[in-house]
Image (cartoon, rainbow, N blue to C red; front, side, top):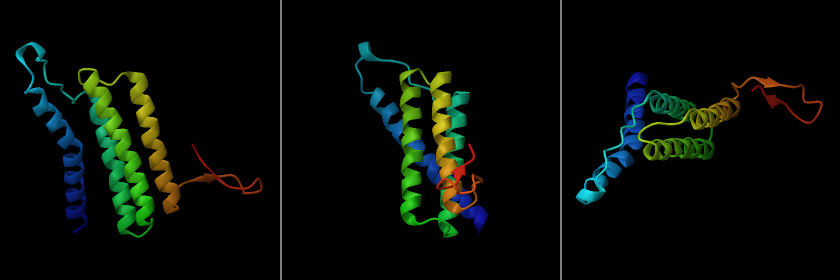
Length: 141
């Protein structure tokens, strides 16, 4: 049962990621002959790594929500942030012939890691530092 739900979630995430790209690809075919450009191939190693990382974060959000470890509002906020990062990656790759420059790749991965850390903190599985004597505990990282 759990594997089936994970597969459905991964499939849905892939569709959500690919659907805008398919529309952009189709729109490119309506250009005139003088405007024609090669379709953008978004399959470079950095793009694939970002997509896989985003899918992993999305799956963590789904799992935490199904286990009632986070509220629907928290899940929605985390999912929205993950989607924003994915869309930024797609936009960068589309503007650079399917590639993501190293600096932007590391920046996007850092943002995804922050969403993942926030998810771990919200579910209570994040490793916290500090004893609270100065007003709180702080995420490690």
